[in-house]
Length: 80
Image (cartoon, rainbow, N blue to C red):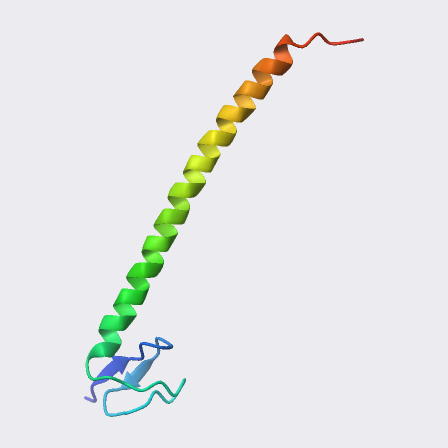
């Protein structure tokens, strides 16, 4: 079975015998393909987690603002 690695640049599977990625022409470093691909995947996952946390904080703040607005509007006299 032929050894394979992952191109750190494009993330595609490449034969470990190649000096350059046939897909994107990036230079292949021995054993670095998988490590770099994993690092990029982990960084992307951290970015998604940070984005999700931010969205939860925004949602909570908007809910609080909506409650304050509803409370304010309940105290405003309504005209007929």
